Image 1: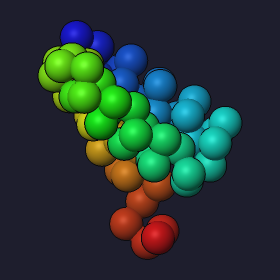
Image 2: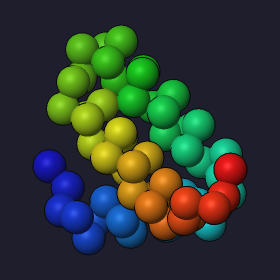
Image 3: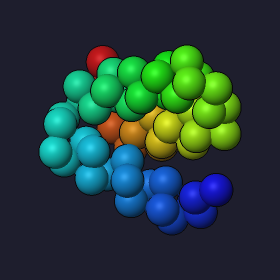
Length: 61
């Protein structure tokens, strides 16, 4: 399990690399993990997506 610092670091890196499309990429990763039966990893990807939403702020769409 990733620490909160790791989650936010990955979230920032993904946003810097992919822009706001990163949220969709992370959601796809979570679904792929679930499809493979990797529930814990899917949960981490969703946590990263939630961190991205916090980073980008409430006024971005």
